[in-house]
Image (tube, rainbow, N blue to C red; front, side):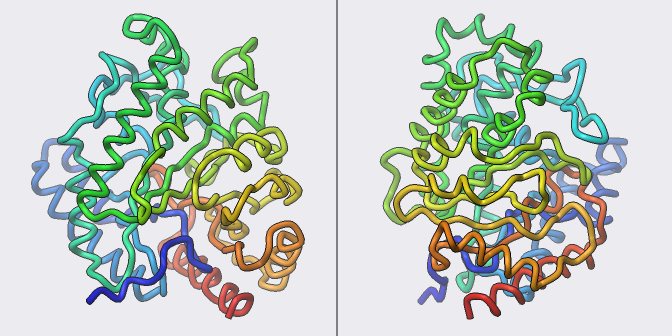
Amino acid sequence: MSTTPDKSPFRADVVGSFLRPAELKAAREQLANGKISADDLRAVEDRCIADLVKKEKTAGLQCVTDGEFRRSYWHLDFFWGLEGVEHNVLAQGYLFHDEETRADSARLCGHVRFNPNHPFFAHYLFLKETAGNDVQTRQTIPAPAQLYAELVRGENAERVNQFYATTEELLADIATAYRETILKFYELGLRTLQLDDCTWGCICDRKFWETMVGAGFDVNQLMQYYLQVNNDAIRDLPADLTVNTHICRGNYHSTWAAEGGYEPVAPVAFAKENVNAFYLEFDTARAGGFKPLQYVSGEKKVVLGLVTSKHPKLEDKAAIKARIAEAAQIIPLDRLYLSPQCGFASTEEGNILTEEEQWAKVALVQEIAREVWG
């Protein structure tokens, strides 16, 4: 009989990615240099993921991930696994606050379709088998809106008109491919899915979007596109499949891409996106205050990202508790949860802290959650 706890989120939670161990980074470099095979790398990944799952359980996490250890990026690896999408390299990467990311991207090479052989299915099965039945397993994938944003970014946009007459047709294909992918995960046993999404967070910062997309775009239209494709992808799913979303402002090597409070997007995203919970960033003044939480509709839950994953200094417990109490003036405390604001390694570079410091952050979240919620 399974002893798996109730569905996520949990009072003490994480976003999902963890720092890649030195052994794994070395193996990736060896593969790139032709010194080991793909099978050799997979064996290292398997070993590192099994070790990570043990550490997650020891840390008290009730829903474990594979740390995204098999990926280079939080988003692109998933996109490349869909039919009709290919790997390309742009002239420029994303411009973060202190540096430019690698310039890898994803563009159309056909119509977007579900791939029954997407590599993430095998990745999830390994995690499920490794984790056992005493914890939940979570699959993180980029949101459908994130794929649309990537396909129309920079020179990628030239490909869209080759395959689609209208934006609506592209959005419909993205939603269908995602929905079929999600149902396949469900068939394999997945019951907790997380959609990682920078699109809403970036809309909060107009300067960012003018840099990456170009002036003259219609922000309101973009928001409607994002809402439409995300909701269409998760419509009519099985009742016991929990779908949560993490809204991010960028997390690359301890840098950030966008700033600004959630006010511009809250009336649309928080009110109308049909998810169970929002994992939100509130770790710095750049993220704004809690007032936009007033738009969180129904019984949706909010995971407060009040502990930063970007640097090793541990937050003051009293200050975090005070902020939770402040948020509870808008959202009832029983619908609030705590986590780091983002993953520790959204890309394989990872943030600038050690694995020991990473786990100290997780322990701090656990300690605060116990003291606040019991």
